[in-house]
Length: 84
Image 1 (tube, rainbow, N blue to C red):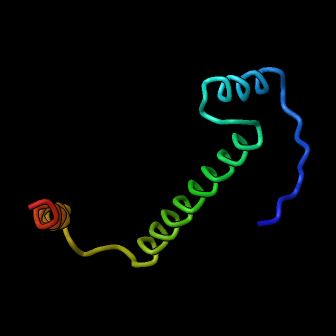
Image 2 (image 1 turned 180 degrees about the horizontal axis):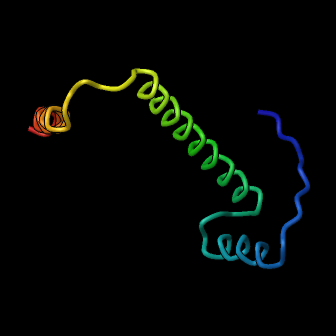
């Protein structure tokens, strides 16, 4: 995999934080720490986009004619089926 060198600017406080993460043994160097942050953000973005899509599906499906009791009972049945 090709790598590209990036130059970033951080505050003194941010630099101290990064160094503390390395000193704690969580990361071996600054690049590894920054890459871990990027991977975490990518994962969070994927989760956000999935949630956003599911919300849109709900909005697009319109208003339900089921009562709250009907919805609750269905959710309880689904939970029992899933968890035994």
